[in-house]
Length: 100
Length: 167
Image 1 (tube, rainbow over the protein chains, first blue to last red):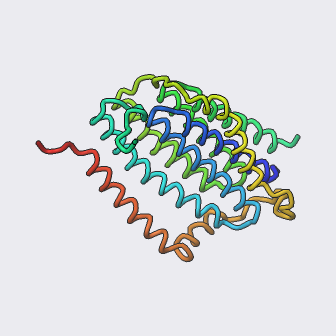
Image 2 (cartoon, chains in turn red, purple; image 1 turned 90 degrees about the vertical axis):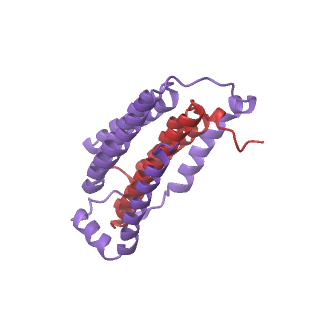
Image 3 (cartoon, rainbow over the protein chains, first blue to last red; image 1 turned 30 degrees about the vertical axis):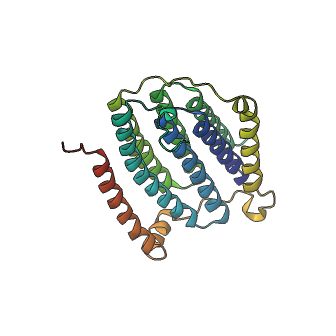
């Protein structure tokens, strides 16, 4: 069997990569996908802890996280379509209405 | 090396490579396909842990529904390659070390060397799916009902956002 800590390290690495993509990418769809990557990393940690402690609570939380991610994807992609319609671009540098 | 450990390293390596490719690729559709690979690898890891239900939900909801939505929107908007912009000097030099520091600190916070009995991997939870379902409808019944409300609100929000304005 695989030690729990291996899963946790993998989860941290995936979360870090998600953060890097979130900060460095300029396309709003890719930024949105990196959020999904971070949610996936957290899910992995939840499932690993659930198995380590022999309780299924972690897996129930994963279900809720997936539901929230699905709702977030629906609303977020609607917003992305609106941005494309209003600005003719998906570059986040061009969406700067609130910038000083 | 036991077969489980071997499978873990193959899946974990593939997941990390695909996540790296998500960062490196310039075209959003390539990033989306890499993300699908990450999700399928994670589903395999869930199977390895013994969380069959979560693995199935991962494939169906993440790989099936959410990523299809992403690919659909990318194709609908005909998204081109990402434009390169000048990074700030600070990002160029401090970006990678800071990202590594973040990953290391998360790992240090989350990894417990003294998990004790829990640290040695134990067998998969018996009847996990049955336990999850009974827990969803007993202990977590209010959050569970709230999620249906959340999805309803999200559907309405998406509809309102995406409809064309009447002229």
